[in-house]
Length: 226
Image (tube, rainbow, N blue to C red):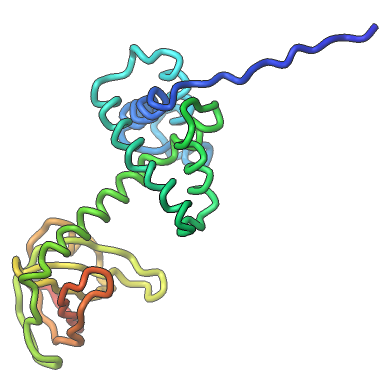
């Protein structure tokens, strides 16, 4: 007796609902992405982001207005991947997968799982874009603050702090309100938190225009916070 098997159609969700569900999962988990690799370090009772997103896709009435707002922003943001792929500038395998997903009108469970990992990426992208925009806005004002070799003492606002694995240091981007000043530090990064104002001393190592923004930047060396 031969049995007949009925192929079960995959469950699909409207992509806008899925983005909102992913945003809701992020909200519920306090902005943290929890999966099998980070679950051991998560608070008791936590659930995987993708599991929460699945539930939200099934019960969209539980989502808040802020979830839909963030979901719409992520949808628009990651649409940019489609353009990058068309221009051949998209080489990351995972982002190629995301480009496939954002081109759809309906998404699967697997797609939602992939999307659940993107909230942190979205926030990092926006932070990077805002930093770049602020630097570009200073093209007209930023100038070199002295000659190479001269010593300086300046009060600055920390704009950004990025770890460099190549040099095992943090690269600090700061401004005195008019000019862009950069330096490297091997000290505790907590000394230079983003948005804080500090006074530093150092010698000018290099004066150059940023390759991406065209902004004049002054690089300091032997920097000390005072």
